[in-house]
Length: 263
Image (cartoon, rainbow, N blue to C red):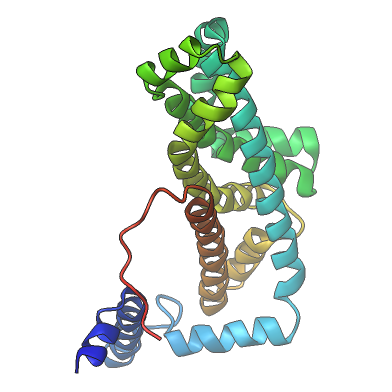
C-alpha cells in the first residue's frame, strides 16, 4: 500500500496524469461542442498531422535549421553575457559608462529591430542566430552582474587578508558564489532562445519551424500549426532541462526539493 502511495506521490507521474486529463478534456470538449478544426483541432487530429509531417520528411529541414539557430544563438549569447557581465562587475568604469546603454538596448522590442538584422545579415541562419544571441544576452548579463555583486564582503576581506590575487579571488570565490544566479539566468535564456529564433523566422526566413508555421497558417492548416508549436515546446523543455541538469551537476551544494522517484 505504501509503495502504491509513493508512486502516486511522484511528481513525474502527477505531471503525466495532469497531461492525460487535459488531453482527454480537450478531446471531449471538441467532440461535445462540435468545435471546428479551424478554431481548435482535437489532440488526435494534431497527432495525426504531426505523424504526416514527420513521415513525409517535411518537418526535418525546418527542425534542423531552427535547432541550429537556437543552439548557436544561445551559445553566443551566453559567452557574450558572461564576458561582458564579468567586465561590468569587476571594472567600475565599465559599469558606469557601458551598463546603462546595455539596459537601453534591452528595452528595444526585438520584433521591431529584427527586420534590421534581416537587412544586415540576410535571410539565412546568420540573422536568426544574431537575434537569438541578443535575446539570450541580457538574462545572462544581469545574472552575472547580480551574482558577482552578491559575493559576501567578509569573504572578500578574508581573501585579501590571506594575500589572494584578483585572479584567485575571481576563480575561487566570486565565480563559485555567483553560480546559483548564473544558472538561473541560463535557465531563462535557454527558454528565450526558442523565442528569439522564431521571431527572426517570422520576420524573414526561407527555412525553419517559424517559416513552416507561417506557411501552414497561410493554408489554414491549424492542426499542423499546433503540431509545430508542440515541437517548439519540446525543444524549449529540452533546453531548460539541460540547464537544470547542469545546475544540479555543477552546483552540487544546492538541493532542489524533488520527490524521490520509485523504481
